[in-house]
Image (cartoon, rainbow, N blue to C red):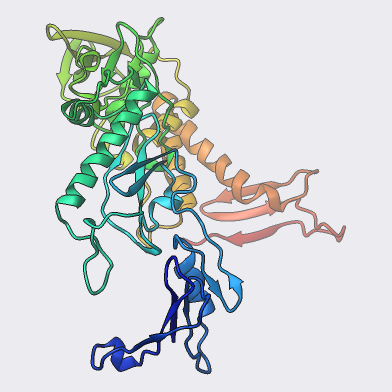
Length: 454
């Protein structure tokens, strides 16, 4: 039963519509309704097990007319609540929001209470606020829904004009905000639409070498780009870690940034000089040899001198040579067996520092179920890197001793009393323990012997 008040009068209509009438299978009869009725009332039977309250509450949430269900007024929310900016255009309210992932994936179009997800433009900035839009249709007959599902908007001329208007609105907001970090292609689009945009503010992320384990990568906040700044384009963690150590040895390292291809086209970005590694040079026994970063020298012993040769692009391509004490060559994400670790004789690097370098440059965990947990893989790699570092910087014997102490500290020390002393003897893989007293004070045997697995 539908009762509808006649606008501007005290009269009303009454419609008793059957299911067949709704489907057009029989005519709908309109009768005179009760005088003084206001608004539109729908009366329908609710069968056992049916609960309409939730459906009505959802349908009424963004409906532009108050809805009362069984005497209770349903809550109403503005579909554009929380928008940074709202403009009305040809009967449509356009709300622009800053990047909010929780709302970004919700429905973004409200058709008089019917909400749906429609492809609308967004505008991303690299360092500044990004924007997306929601629209609330107020009175726009030319923006239509696809029938009968009503789950999408008809892609007609009105839809195309709406997309362009939203895009213009984004750029107008960016221009009004002053400083921006639009991608150059978006900046160019905004200018082509007649928006007076200045170039993006010169901001880039300071250079930080990547790690073979992506979970260890450090992402720095952008800094202002000053005159004389350089951009380093590395080819992977091995190159980048090697370069970072070399550049850090300078008394006054230059301002160094990560490349950002989205800014290519801006005059300030295109004017920056870019550096790349051309080759490595090694001097050993009076002989100098040059190799590509991914090639191995196959050095017999520790070198006397190591250099990183860089190409510097700009007005003219020039060469820049950095002297360093450490170069690691090989394939990215490879094993220690595949890498060549070169440390000059005069280097002051310690085994722990070299171990940390190798972990950053080469350790890449496997997600294979049989490879062990992340913690196990990291420990195994670190132990191997520590053994290699001590053997290279000291002796193989020192590496063996360190490995034995490491195992004892990790696996044994926590099991024995804090005080007292005892002796563990290994003789032809036979292990004997002497002087280890029981914790309860019972007398210990003179000699406790166990046999290691062979």
